[in-house]
Image (cartoon, rainbow, N blue to C red):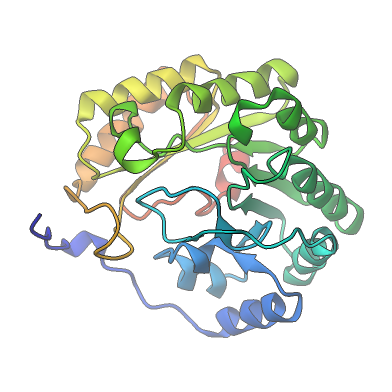
Length: 285
């Protein structure tokens, strides 16, 4: 497939390196990973410049082979029992008011790493009780007991991305299941209605507008509160190709339709990512 030329509206602005160096120093000192770096996020310069980052726990090697993702695939490392405290110390050092914790998918662990997520939430609460905590979790292979561990730790937001339309799962997320992902969000609300749920979808992978609207409807019916929609950018030529660069006007149409469906907060623009300016969702309530 021929490469689609990148449009002008996708140019990333340069940002100050002062905060970037500070964040890098803390991450290195505490031996922490971020999805900002592992997934080659286009916004990491801006976010690090604002002295914020999305922490990626449970190592930096994923057990799944999604074709859109830049995170290393293979045999993961053993779980670092000291990681919860290290994350908590980083949150405190950065002075965060809202923190996002995500992970690689760990299908090799009996609970998918759910207990480790809960331990991280608990450690952050001990160090900085007033910080709003958002977790971006894998599907735990549909294990309700694993999900219950995360829900019981009571983060303010539980995020799980559906990523794309169900018709593209075989190509883009071959080891995932669309219905299972939507059901996870529904289960969170059943287990604890006070927790906000969030999900995200990428566009430009070959989906149609009506298919995107159908996904938004499924998410809303599952009780999803917050939504992010962003342009897919292929990390390399080996990854799933960019089929289309979606125009900003289309993102605005998605945003309007999502709000009309009843989502409480919607971020929809080419450079939006799941945890980009994540604190704005709670501020909007």
